[in-house]
Length: 408
Image (cartoon, rainbow, N blue to C red; front, side):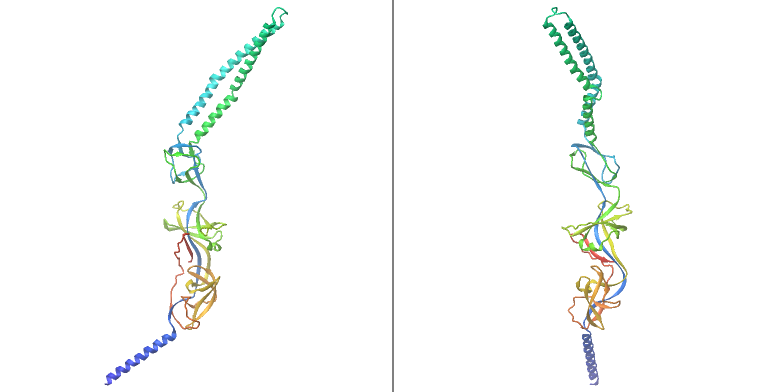
């Protein structure tokens, strides 16, 4: 009986202790996750996806319509000014040029000497007709009739007209005169068209695209090749417009090509667009790459981390501990002596994962991780410490293909 009574007493005592412990825990409040405010170096970066682009590109086309005979370059080839890119069929133009050359040769060897001979003959005929007309005018009256004198004068007039016509033709056929100039202009025009059948590079650079093959019919206005000019290489990134206040010229960035994730390289901002894309709500930022890595290619996809601000020491709080955010003001649930106090804080650097606390908290303060908790002011709580990495990129890929602000 004593043993039974002893066991009963023990059970009652345990029940009392359990109830007391439960009551004590209830008095202490629920167990909630919390953060401890700490001071640490802080770097603010904006992360986004962009593409590699040369500063300038040249589009090469044909000035004439023709059929492609030969293509001499392809994508990736380096070209210099004057390098031959494409050859068009030119049989008809070659025939026209030869015809003009033959006409010039015929002018020099046949038509011009013939015109000189005709001029000499016309001159002799004119001189003969002039002497005969003068002789008949000087004969005594009554020897020749008026009709015979008039006939001699008419013969002289016809000879003079013939001489003038022949002289004009000979002058036109003379070296450097109208006929030769006309034939040389025809030859030059044909040769110019013939030169256009050989399409050459006008700039130094790298062939990016080729849109033509042998046998294709090409026409003016069609792009046959795109050439990236030698020179500066840029990275063009469409950032969300909400990040615009964070950017400034010459800010440094770390860039990683998707194809070479282990080979980061530096760049810096050298252009911020003065306008916003109204459809996408983005602002274009260009970063200059210098030196350019050997593996970098035109239109490569790259990830860009732009360093927009830095603090050597800063009080940092995770964003999920903030509520009622208005501008740079927010409210946190501060826990002191096991009780909740709603505390207003002033924020500095802000990101999607972490924010800097400028005032309202001190190092070592503890705040609830759930800023939207429904617990009232002064409620008791127990804390379960949470660890939050200060490197917290958030994948928020949207139509702009951009990651939000992060802190490193």
